[in-house]
Image 1 (cartoon, rainbow, N blue to C red):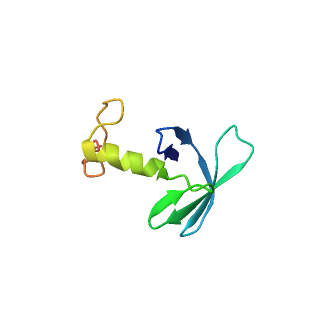
Image 2 (image 1 turned 90 degrees about the vertical axis):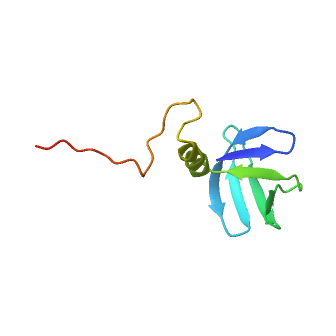
Length: 87
């Protein structure tokens, strides 16, 4: 997952636990975990800094919607028929 703060700072993070309105994550290279809380539909840190949370599956879904990956390479979508050779 990726955390994006209001100042544009981005950090990769790993979810350790999650409930409906709380999430505990760890940032690789940091010793402490970060607790995020959902306040009125927005995630905030323990010191009340707003943070946007984006999971890898959300990035993949967005790439599939455009038909291209971040690098501009066409993406195979679920709706694309797969042809099997006749044996």
